[in-house]
Length: 443
Image 1 (cartoon, rainbow, N blue to C red):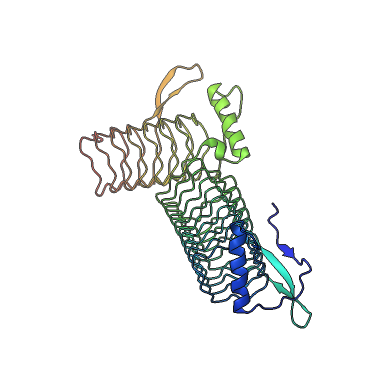
Image 2 (cartoon, rainbow, N blue to C red):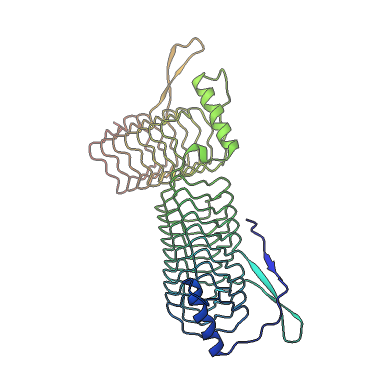
């Protein structure tokens, strides 16, 4: 479906307002119609004023309610499934437990509406406007307004919400499984605890949105905006994040370890060429140069990135367990909370890198023996360089840091139990609160 604004003129004549008695008659005939009883007639309440009406559990399934004013109405538990509610006014309406499945809600007004536990499976909530005649004969242009909607716990599975405006809306714990939110305006929207499994959020604007503990398993966030968004504790397993910049969003505790295949194609190409380069010892392929590129939360487990240039690269939360980074240049890299357990980092350059709370359990950060042109040992070594690196609270138990340069490194609160620090340079290193039980320190 198109995500653009829908406009319906439809040549509607100016509607005569029905009396309460006439409306009750319409509802009665509609009830008969839904039950296929004799004399039943589908309800047509186009442009009627039903504001503040109290109709809990009413059966209006399949009714025509185009442009109908249902503002401030009480429709708790109402059956509005498969209704034509194009440009209807449901602002401040109480639709708790109501069924709106498969209804046409294009252009509907839902400001301050309560849709707690409402069922909106398959609804169309795109922007839409109705051109309607007024008493003077002039045309009135009714425009959609979805801001500040309360959709807490609502069922929006498979709903078409493309280009819908949910600015500052509340969707706490709402079920948006496989919903289409392509290009949707979700700025400042509260989606805490919401289920967005396999939902489409391509080019959606989630600026300053709250998605704490949201289920984003398999979601498509291609080119979405998440600046200032709170994504703490969210589950991004198997999510697509091509073109998404997480550098200005909160990912604390988020489950967002993604495969290399989730990266932009140019990054995948660089990594693939480097793997060939490493495997053929430089005979084929090309050494990776990823200066300042964002590789945050990517799973590089077991990957050979030896010799790669990762200067000032964003690798926060990435998984590099058992990977090879021998002689890699990672100076100034962001490795906050990265998993480098059992990683081979001999001769690596991590000067001024941020490894706050990183996992380096059992990591190899020793030196590389320098060989001459004839391939013979020279008796000289190239140590791992961690000078001025930040290792606050890092897990380094069992790590091998023999000969490592830790000049000026911040190891405060680090776990260095059983670590090998023999011949390491610890000049100016901060070891306040570090656990050195069983560690082998320089003589």
